[in-house]
Length: 218
Image (cartoon, rainbow, N blue to C red):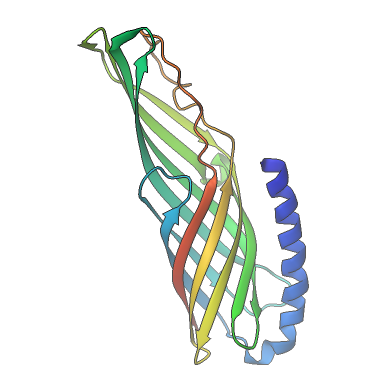
């Protein structure tokens, strides 16, 4: 998955640069600076509702990419029973937050605009994937003390926006941000061993965030 995304990022970056240079021919009508704000309406890997947003700042400087930030968060709960003891089970309550810094190009067309870009997140950039899990085990009918398991991993992002501008000042758009990172073993950093025997699969939270938003030009 990560290898495929790296190829996708290279293709998007090359396309961004080519289309960005082409779009400069229309620079006389380009905005001086634009600020965009988007809200997440869905995240494909979330088991339920997700909340998130994406913001960006655009400028007219040739060749230099614009910069943005993406954030999405969701919750996942799961109860797993011991295969040989129905009175023993473990409950997992996991909150995952994905943050990236991204670079993109705005490409103007006669009717619509397109933004193409890529992003990255890691702990040393104060971004990345942060997963926090609260673990509750009931062993043979007795509730044991709660435990916690926190994880942090890096994430790669590729995205596009399609926009419909009005009066050269405001643009409404829809976007899709694909986030890719390793599967998470959400119990790997627990401090207490399980008393029961549970089969806990790694979580595949890589997915796409769909957004809608607006850009205002100054």
